Each structure stands twice: as C-alpha cells, then as structure tokens.
Length: 146
Image 1 (cartoon, rainbow, N blue to C red):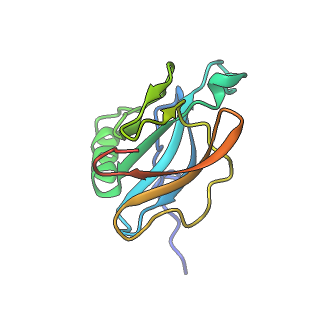
Image 2 (image 1 turned 60 degrees about the horizontal axis):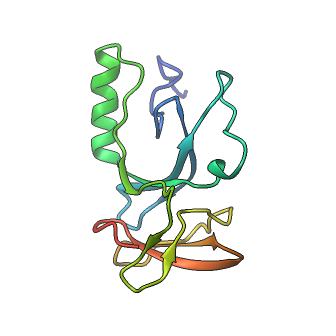
C-alpha cells in the first residue's frame, strides 16, 4: 500500500517567487542544477505582462540541493516565499555590445526550448530572436558568459 504524503506540497517547491513567472525548466547534465526562464507577473491574478517586456526574460539557475534545503527551512519557519535562484543573464533594457562586437538585445526565446540544451561542459544553448532573425546563443551557466 502506498503511503500518501502528509502535506500535499511535499516534494514540490516553487522555482521563483510568486510575483515572478518561471518557464521552461531544464535539468543540467549534473542532475543537480535547474536552469529556467523568468519574467515578472504584473496582475493580481498572475497574468503575464503583455507586450515585448513579456518576452525579454532572465535566465536563472537553481542548485537543487541548496533549493531543497532552503525551502525546508522556510517551511519550518512558516515563510511562504523565498527567492533562491541565481541570475545567469539579466533582463536587457538597452542593447549591449558583446565581447565579439555583436549586439545583444536580451533573451527573446524561441519557445519551446529544446529538451536537451546542455553540452557536457555546462554550456546552455537556446534560440533567440535578435532583430529580424533567429540566432543560437551559447551561455556558460557558471561564468555567465553569453
């Protein structure tokens, strides 16, 4: 007979605070890191902000071991919302010139993200819209280099 968990939320944790929207979580090859897209939620009912700001996202990283530990501690202290993910690529509001001379307009992802988007050396690959074209970008999730 299977024992039902005492708490219906046992084993489940939020990837982001309730005022943020987490999208397309992907497990890194190490099995201990989750990378996901993040953007703000603007309305009281949790609807996404309409318009271009909906697409300009942050890329976030969450260490599962640290996240589980922090979530358990927060639950024991009756804290309902914690923000424990690390920003890999922040939202870009003004285009940035990259180290190779190209212009980076921010993360406007071509969704859905592929199921397998990591190389063996923690490089995260995704397709983004940049101007009028689609480009593949490689992002080192440890050094945060795009």
